[in-house]
Amino acid sequence: MRKGGRSRIWAGLAAGFVGLSLAGAIMAAEPLRVTEMAADLDEPWGLGFLPDGRFFVTERDGRLSLYPASGGEPLMSFDGFPDLVAEGQGGLLDVMVPRNVSARREVLVSYARAQGEGSGTALAALRFSPDFTEVTEVKVLFEMVPGSNGGRHFGSRIVEAPDGTIFLTIGERGAGMPAQDPARHEGSVVHLRRDGSPASPGLFGEKGLPELYSKGHRNPQGAALDASGQLWVVEHGAQGGDELNRVEPGRNYGWPVISYGKNYGGGQIGQGTSAPGLEQPVHFWDPSIAPSGMVFLSGRMFPEWEGDIFIGSLKFDYIARLDPDDGYRETRIALPQTGRVRDVREGPDGAIWFLSVNDGAVYRLSRS
Image 1 (cartoon, helix red, strand yellow):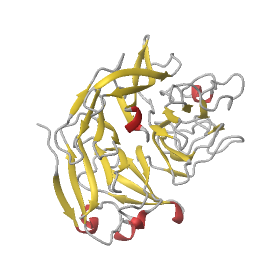
Image 2 (tube, rainbow, N blue to C red; image 1 turned 120 degrees about the vertical axis):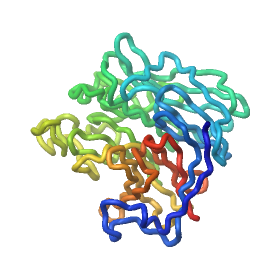
Image 3 (cartoon, rainbow, N blue to C red; image 1 turned 30 degrees about the vertical axis):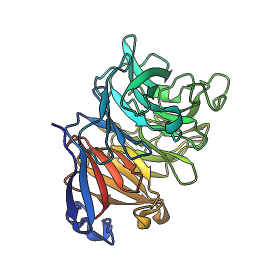
Image 4 (cartoon, rainbow, N blue to C red; image 1 turned 90 degrees about the vertical axis):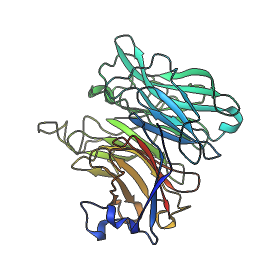
């Protein structure tokens, strides 16, 4: 039985912080409320909102569900994704609701798609009935060049650019050096038009794949635009070295040539922490927090946090807040509900929504 709507008030959230002094905790001027909006989910991965407040949730085993704005039971569920492979870290991954969804009734999803003996990150468009209770068409818009094996590091966040084009992050699939190869999609951000064609071709020269926007990423599982429309990604390092990167077209972010982490079991990765022609992260973590979904908060509900970055931690069970006005200093929201936070989004009214893998639930953090 799926359920929703359960609330609990935390006095300034102070009771929910772990591992930090109160000076390092996020304190609010008023008590905040945590409300369970959906439950009984199996590995929830992505979250997206329709203009009327109804929300989509993806589950990695291959199910996309639409919930009422008030939460509770799903209004519809769909699992007919072509050639979906739900193994390891693969399966149904992100969901993105474009700004013109009311006119086109089209929602985008990413997933691991079968490719011969392996699988690769793919992007599909779902067309819906006028009331969004039925999927009428599924069209695969893009899939990475085949050749990757194993069930890890699919990346797979989807972001709509200010001009309506699409950014899709792709992990390096645990393969290392293909992240430096412009003829491969591993370890990249690709830039696509809504029909799946390249949106800014030629950034990596004649030998580069035309849809490549950036290279040298390890496993970017979080991506978002700031208020100016600039793309940022957050990506997993190895043993340490998780990175927040400001992504510019045609740039190389270094993996696995440079890193602030170490190999599992010890030892330097590549050439160290810097090399000519390779970009530096804006912020990095050591030890690793296993970062996932991220959002730049608008401040509609929380004006004191306007422009701050909220990022889920899969490893340490909290939501990180980075303050760009304070050197990206990190403070943490750690609550009983923040177990393996897979995605963080801002709701239509400015509330902070997040997915807990441990609880199999969607939560809303709001003013009381």
